[in-house]
Length: 325
Image (cartoon, rainbow, N blue to C red; front, top):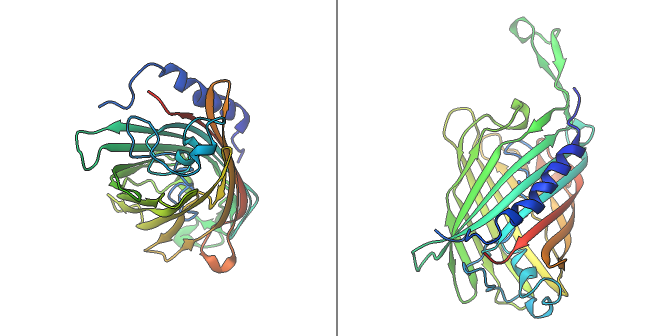
């Protein structure tokens, strides 16, 4: 089967990433991923900013004193903090040259939008939402699909690579600021938007989410973000997903640390994947607009997975950061 031509899609999504913030300029928006398959959720991409300060003034204390000339305030800290209240419009491309139990390459192009909202609660002063839609070109899984009488293997066809939309992933956090950082909990939803059965689970899922992050150690962010995918019908499977949060601010807008792909454990099949990741990025102001550009390399040792999983790959993410309403 022919794969999707990524060039026009990339151009279209790039236009959305750069145009949407301009359309929303002057409006008070703050008032009020692998898809979930055996390959693991396509990282609703970098848990781009979600922070306690709902006026979109920074409350992060990591590296901001050196970033003013590159993006203003603590944007470098906010851009890597999954509890930072900042609008993010992100385009992300993940290229996977090798996948366990499959042949050929895979590619995931994802669009993610992070929007914060005020609440009337003093305990949870902000609600941060993140929506991700991936476009997937999968590797060719090993094996074939039996289609003969009684599933006789004499009548079978290759599974082949697939291309199309993946499932739509929405998560949110009601955020509580603390002296040492912040924590949050919130509801989420996986919608069966996949255009091919192989690219999603064809199942609605409820996804309670939590995050805890410590920013009290200067120039460091340490914590965890996790979720539980619970199917609302009999078609999907239950799975846990976690993202270790380890980021070191280097100054001048530069940062490094752990990537933002999720570790996944399927509680029904027992399959899991725990990729090792290294990310390098920079927050920089270009023509009076703030951007976060990051490159991530990842590798999954054979002992760190069971079932299909990306063996290694590379991710490029470009985010437009909007720190004001």
